[in-house]
Image 1 (cartoon, rainbow, N blue to C red):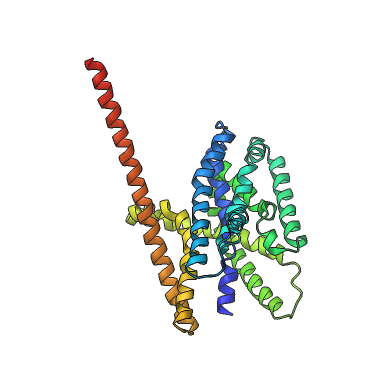
Image 2: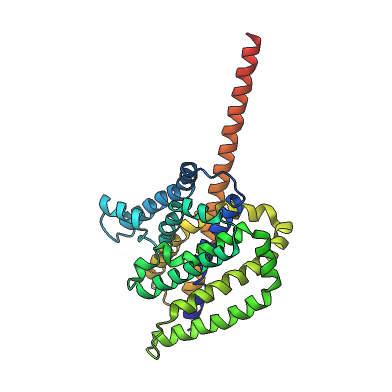
Length: 323
């Protein structure tokens, strides 16, 4: 029951990722700044899809040649890259790319500065999200479809455009957010557990889930904003290092979870809490240390190349002046 409840309570993570991705993008592009679609796509491909492509390949090679889960087939590797099914966290990349590909549509919508129009867009996004979650029977397919998360992207879009108003709103209503989270969290956990036990037909789960995610995102954002401001003054360098490595941590951590699981299974360790503790410590420690070191090395290498390039340009300019 404890593990089941924890799983349900953190199920707002992907909607929160969608929300914050939209918030960050439209905080940047929501002020009528020029938007160039090819440049945007190249930037997203370079920063998001290329690391994903590399890590899917690494996972596949480890699963094939170390864990012997299946035989190597290039067609299967290509399929895993395209559908994100190789590891639990990869489907998010397939999902967020759909929003990126449709970016011109979101830009056009965001340029309409009308409260009634915005309200209509939010209502449509809510209806589409609930409809997809209720009427698409294949859950594995549904979670990778952008329309299943449209309300979270739309809310993030408007939060980014009107960021100061959004911050003011959540600070004024944080008690309501916390109470809403508490009520929907209990409902989400209890009703889901009763559904698993066969006691009820939880057909209205998408509605509860969407409201639970809504209150979770806004409540968490309210709390984490103050916490971040406090921590930045005490450990800014460390936090920035983790921030710069966060995407690599996200891509890597499931490989460590799987590896530790296989090792613990080989040692015949069966105690659930001990296994969880070992996996928890190993996953966070190794993924953070590896990713932070990798990000730091990359950043320093780029800085060194830029300094060398600037030095060569300066030397070339001096030679020209001399000649």
